[in-house]
Every structure is written in C-alpha cells, then in structure tokens.
Length: 457
Image (spheres, one colour):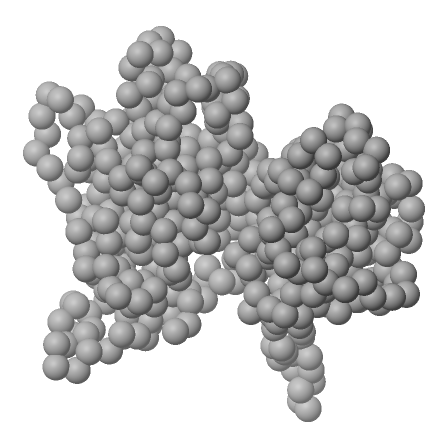
C-alpha cells in the first residue's frame, strides 16, 4: 500500500473534535481546539514543575522518539490528549528535540499548521523548556514510537517509571507492567494510538493502518473533502485503499512528501541532527563491560550531494563531540535522477548508502581502556555489517571520506553501498545493538577474511 500521510496525521489533525466530554470543574483544560489543549497542558505542567514537585510527579510525560518525525509528534500529542481529555489523567506531550530543531522538518511545520498550531509552534513543549530542571522532577513516562526510555530521564531520578508504551519498532522487552503495552509492526505508530482511542485494531499491521485512517478521517480537518466511510468502503465491496484514492488525500500526500524530501536548504550539521536517534550499548565482550553511545542519522540525500569535500567529517566530529558518542552511522536514502529520451528528469531506482565513523574522542578517553580502541571497534563493526545477509553492503569506493583529513588521527571510518534499499533504520538499529553488545553471531563467529583497506583508515 502506498504511504498515506493520513496515517501519520490522522490523530493529530483535530482529534479533539472527535470527542468532547462535558466540561466540569475537575477538567479545566478541556478545550475545543488542539492548539488550546497544547497551550493549556504545557502551561499547567510547567507551573507544577516550578512550584509544586508533588503535583509535577502526577503528570504523565508522553514522548515520541528523539528523531522528532511527524509520526512521533502526532502520536505523542494524540496519546496525551486521550489521557487528559478522555481518561481525565494529567498528561503532556514532550517533543524530544530542541526548539531550534523544529524548523528542520518542513513537513512537520506544514502538518502542524494544518492542525491549527501557530506559526511559532509555541504550544509545543520541547526539551528546551525543561533543560533547566535537573534531575527531572517528573516520574511517569508514556513512550510512543519507541520503547526505551533515554538515560537522561532516569539519571538521578530513581522513581522514573514507564507507565505506557505504544510503538511499532522492535520490542526490546522492557517495561512489562506498562499499561497499555502495545508493541507490534505497523506502518505508523499513530495507527496504534488511534486503535487505543476505541477503533477496531485489525489483525495485520497494514490493516491496522487502514482501519485507523478510515475511522479517523471523518473527524479530521479533511472531513469535508472526503466521502463518508460507507461510500469509501461499503460492507459488500470493501476497498482497503479507498481513502488513499481520494483526491484531497493524494494532494496532501504529494505536498508532505515534497516538503519532506526537500532538504536542499540544510547544511551537513542540520542533516545529521534532523532525523537522529541515539543509543547506549554496554560492551559485554570488553573488560569491565563499559558502555558507549552510538547515533544513527537518516538523511534523504546521497552523500556526494551534501557531504563531499570534508563537509560530512567536519559536521560529524562536531556533532559526535557535542553528543558524546563514539559511533555514528549516517544512513542515506535517495533516488537517482535520470534524463529520459526527451531530456526530462525522471525518478530512478531507490538507493541507500552508509557512512560509519568511529571517533577517537572524549568518550573513549574517559573509558580509558587500553583493550578498547577504535581499531577493535572498527573490526567488530565492519565484520558484523558485512556478514549480514539482510542489508547486503558492499564497500563504496567513490566517496573519499576523510580526504580532507578532518577526523582525529586514530578515528576509523568506512562507507558502504547498501544492497537492500528496503532495510531502514528499524533494521540497522537492532543490528548495531547486536554487533556492539556481542550478541550477534555475525559479530562473533564470522571467519576472518582479507580485504584491501579501501575507504577505511
């Protein structure tokens, strides 16, 4: 089924109109618009955090993942709304990025404007507004679009508790007492959230997306542009793709895709942090079992278009030192643009690349383990990646990473073409975990092979 942004937007676009409980003295934040709900919940939450830690502890902080994509934002807003307005429990969505980073995703800005938010998105609570509070004074977390609470939220916060998980990534097996705990494959996490709202949750992942979209669409800002559900999918002749075929939805799809794909105005540093996720991996195979931090940046443009002539290396070092990470994977996704016989540009084959950097930086120096070097990490990582049959990598010989010598002397790097263009970060992240933590057969049992040091230092 083609990607339908309504699955990502379905809950965020005026979900508040779908259910309006009677206002009572005990629910002063009940609102008739998404913008007002967000403003009220943010203000009330920050007031309690500053003035009454006992009240702050009663709030549930709902967070999407740190990439800050549209699915994460929509899911966090929707779940917080359900908790606050339907279940009458104080909840606030926290967008897990800095306020300055909101402008890195044009498709998010467009979708939020459609949902009635202001041009400045002041209604949203971001990491910028809570950075002064350390340790964090709130204790209850609901995770959407990921299922592992970041270390920053548990540091010096022993009462931190994950009370709910709604996700469509690989299940890491944590927080077994969370309620709800919904973790299963699905096109969009927003579909799972929509199902929690009381919709029929279909048996298969794709069906969940379709059912949720069909049910939520009449309650969205696009309700006047689409036929009623009975016309879209009659009982006797159900058409699971009917909503996607509606002209208004196709136009929205086109607009969002174009805005998401256009990153020509962003520099290398912007692209690295635009769609970024971070992980902590204990190295069980190393003496003392130290932990290192790794990051994965997804970039919708080929390396040569934005990272040539030392731009990638310079930005990567600055970003890795800023975040305190040792391993950075840059995962590109793009289509070749080719000219047809008439001289017009046409979309070519979908392709992916990987650039990996292992930094001889602050984190490794702090660990101060002579047996843990960039060389050892590189051997382990290259072997694990190259042995994996799902991603099918091959060394990319035509991208001269570190030609400008901007990486620290003992840093290691390698660039690959990815044979399987369908393997996204959802595939790479668990593979990286297996390789670094030592639980993957690919990282421990592969026979040594001799390779020329092409594109590697």
